[in-house]
Length: 450
Ligand SMILES: Cc1cc2nc3c(=O)[nH]c(=O)nc-3n(C[C@H](O)[C@H](O)[C@H](O)COP(=O)(O)OP(=O)(O)OC[C@H]3O[C@@H](n4cnc5c(N)ncnc54)[C@H](O)[C@@H]3O)c2cc1C
Image (cartoon, rainbow, N blue to C red; front, side, top):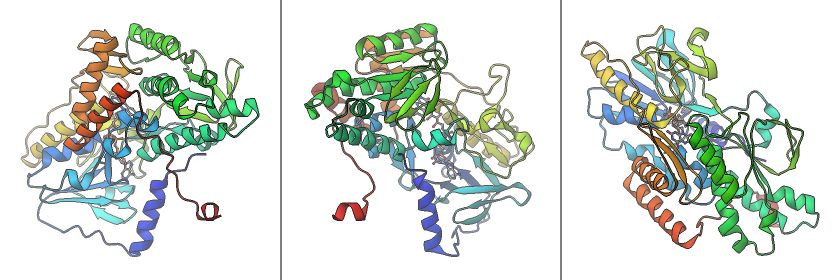
């Protein structure tokens, strides 16, 4: 069973160590910009505000930025977790008047311009909410306890360990059904994450696992991908969805169930809306996200998916000095009646524009509205195969896969990470190997000492 939000536990520890905490943020004559979240939006904003006459305070519940598009490669033993994360202190170490605080923001108090956090309360002049989204279980608490989400780094690591531990167990059991349930994987959600995980598991099953576990017959390992709608990759063209379907079913023999929902799961048996039952100890939940809401804003500014309604300048409706950017923000326009897609480029572009606009505010200049420059979308399905749509042009296969590799390398934070990821990919490509097949789970003293 997955661990629940260990990051919250860390913060509880932090509080008990500090007792009565003081944040040690110096008071200056400079306007204070408090940023909640060092994700794609938050870090682009801070990079552009560097060396400007402002004090910047960043809060994050992790001390690192996560490159979420590659989480699935950590979960499937393709990359080390460190290579897709960057410590936030290191990232901004040369910025004067910048302060990072490792803490969870728990409430916003617009009436007194302060926020409450796990390490105390802080005043702001400008508040930027950039705290993204969390996994949406659609209110099903039972599922939330049993399935594996893929939104944070520790979740990817936990999934990797779980998959490998199950194979170790599969070696020991005699019962065929039990063995099958330990080997089979069900993925819920046929968007880019679900498709990419299915492809990566297909690669593992074909090239890696049979060598590690010669006693197991991997022809018996089934990978199921469940999608509620009638096609994969709904945010891309029909053609790209069909191509992804073809790659998954032909190359990796993934069972793709379209027009199908998961209706029940008890930790061992999955029940689908078509009545079919699948035995599986691993259900990966890639079915959607919902805003990471922090209490304190009025209900009128919260909209579908727990997103915060903002105007064209990313100002939260009704507030002059509170902004929301990235996945958590919902800017409704004619072109985007449901808000922009929750993608990294939107978050980055909003972060950069808000930096400009904050400086404009200080100079009492008119603010610039946000226009999204859509560079396209893509998804990869195992080696040499991807689908991409760039500037209206659709590409598939090896060329799309190379574009995918290049774009992801470009956006990973830090030169070291780029190099490590590139080296891993080259190694994996030529050796058909996955270097990080480690089971790393919390050490349980009582069990391990006997
Ligand atoms: C598995 C997966 C694959 C994806 N693949 C792609 C892709 O291929 N291409 C693409 O464009 N997009 C992809 N996305 C979406 C993309 O990652 C998001 O659009 C992007 O991360 C949004 O940036 P953000 O800054 O709004 O939020 P995030 O990057 O999620 O950052 C939010 C930050 O806020 C912190 N935080 C949250 N709550 C609190 C709190 N209360 N207090 C303090 N800190 C807090 C978090 O720790 C986090 O660091 C993917 C997402 C996932 C999960």
